Image 1 (cartoon, rainbow, N blue to C red):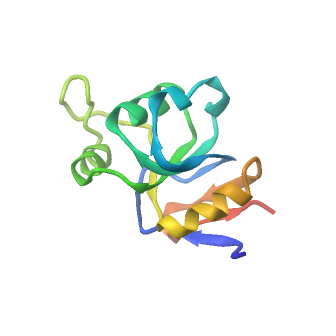
Image 2: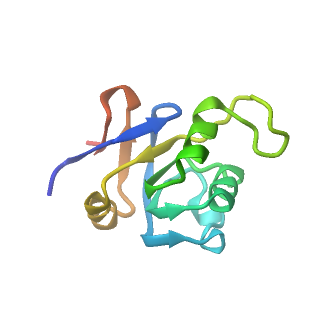
Image 3: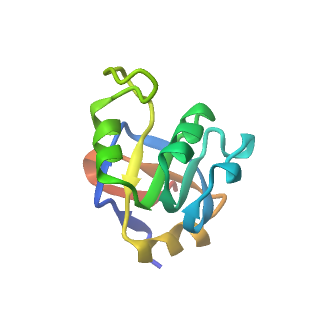
Length: 125
């Protein structure tokens, strides 16, 4: 198993936190609750509703294999979804290859770091 995963693209800031793997399919908002607070959550496709809930639950970051391109661009631009204006969103969103989700599944509960400038996610020593 590779000790690090390449980020295809991402937006936000460097994050550190415990990995919380949610599954490979579509991530339903009801899967998200207080247990994900402060964690790097990883899963398949996140809808706008699921991302809004993740933001409200103050996750450290979101790792996904699939997100709508317009939604990614809104997050990158800091568009507030509620009022349609630019603001500072604190959501770090990272896109990885689908086959790389196994890294998160096998390392669930371990601490990881994702420095965006390095375009990778790796386990903390």
